[in-house]
Image: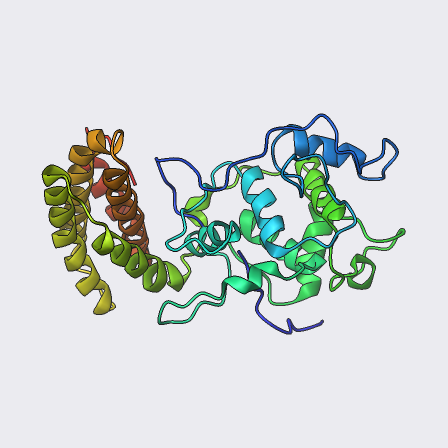
Length: 330
């Protein structure tokens, strides 16, 4: 068995009620550079019709099927396909791929992000190889990844998602370390669709520590920098910061308070967001305060869940009782 040579750098997203940053492309009748007899024509047409893929040009007329598929491009199409996953709005947009990367952070996909909150966005520009892509699919359905490439590939074979080259079903016939083309990427996604897998349950995903030590503080910093000129919005921002600052102190201690106290803290923020929501419909500043606060809150909720894994049933029951009647939800 071959030991994994390195941890895969993946592209999380925190669920927003305010819409997605990465918007799907408008379905194109046909890409001019994909011939009618192209080996992946059926998959490309399927991906285009369902808005899972985009063209490489502004007009969305060129697909470049033979161009190497980047990690960002793969995760964008995978996350569009996996309905429960919604894209995170990046804290400091550096490229369209920033949203893809920060989405994976939230959902717990393996990613190298430093303890102090640095994320290397450049990893998203590198080509993705076949076993890396398989790792993301395994994680999506199993909420874990395997240590050995052979385990990953065998899982893909067993689920009917992948086929080896020729008639063999071996690690070598899967060509695990070969980079994928864009056509191969959408073909793999199409094979995933044909395998009729069970629904993805994001509640099973394991929190990546970057959710706690990257997402929360970065969103809190963004909230602090937001300049709210409207008096009502400014007061809401200050009220939100008062509770979120308490949560930050709690996270710094690497422990949580009692479940009841934590649920009450979260409830307070949700109530404040309910009060702010009408302003968010008409004010960009209010929308930003709302969005950053909710994003930080969801990261904190995952922190509490992670620290209390033996009491999750009690935690969720307390939430169900406390959050009744609230419009804003985690």
